[in-house]
Length: 158
Image (cartoon, rainbow, N blue to C red; front, top):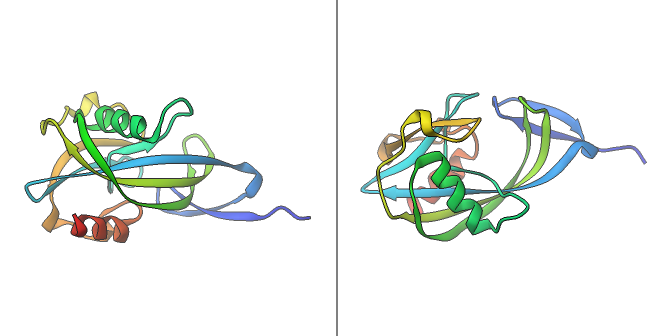
């Protein structure tokens, strides 16, 4: 039986074809944090587009633990509570490490204890930076590195 090839989206917004044997499963979590008609977003360093705070779930942590850790590392915000908004998936290829994944993405509506974001130099992430409160009214799907339509729909439902 011939190996299947999979088309993956890269962190720079392009498509690349990889053999299915190179894929790993990668669950990840993302927080939708809205306050006073603004949302916390980061800039994707590769494509210079917006993304939600979040990232991969480590093998030793629960989804909720990962969400708290990722939000804190990337924004400095402390999670008070969260509610699952939706899940989706993506075949993704990360250029810097040449890692291909079948990503399972969990999006959460989040409430936070504080609202002051950490400075850019304190963000603990390779790919995301510059956390900011962005006015929702200024956003459109094409402003996001990935899943722009989905994210905008989730924002409207909140």
